[in-house]
Image (cartoon, rainbow, N blue to C red; front, side, top):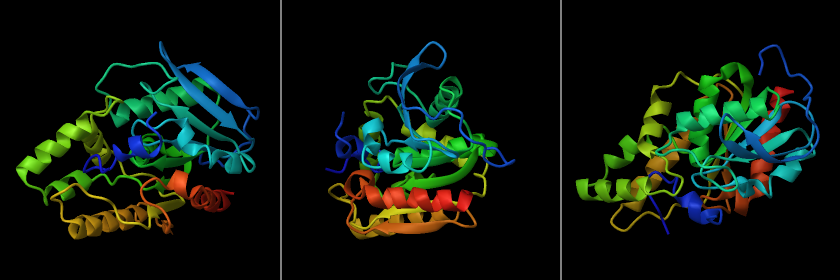
Length: 275
């Protein structure tokens, strides 16, 4: 089932519903962590393992939780410190007022790594809508970020590009579906925030793209939207002068579940360039 034009809602179904420029320093926290951390009147769930620097921060897709990374985190924990977490309104994290935006999530994540003593520098790994959050975090805190991995990430310009190919009725239906997400996220405000943010820092980047075509809603021209999606993925590579693209040939959208080894290898590629 294809949930929404902007892809982000698909992660709900697919994951089971429910820096410093001065060089890396050794991480201070090298013991496993799994619990709630106060970020200022609310608590977010944080799970970390491994030791070393940089720290890998894993960002799930819309309504996805830390379990998105169950098949990826252990591999990376054998190489460096790695953390997954649950955003506000995703159990077991506590609730926050809605609607929320990518900027709210960036603010929360920054508070979480501070309160949780998760040391910079970071390699950000974002899946689907989490890729937008990772892009905005990198542009907001560029000195803390030394690399990025974007896994089937949304592109900041995809709303305008997709809606140019849709009828008013299709746009209305799709927006209603997308805005009904259980995480309470204003997706369209979030896309606008990323579009208007400063350019992300030029850091090692791997873009991981599904090899299997998307399933688009009835009435959508699959050839047109698959071409747009492919072009958007290639464009994300250009966010870095050293960006590379990897095709997860056996995967649809949910690459972390279907080919976690591809995601792990992409992270390892960035880590090697950072070291």
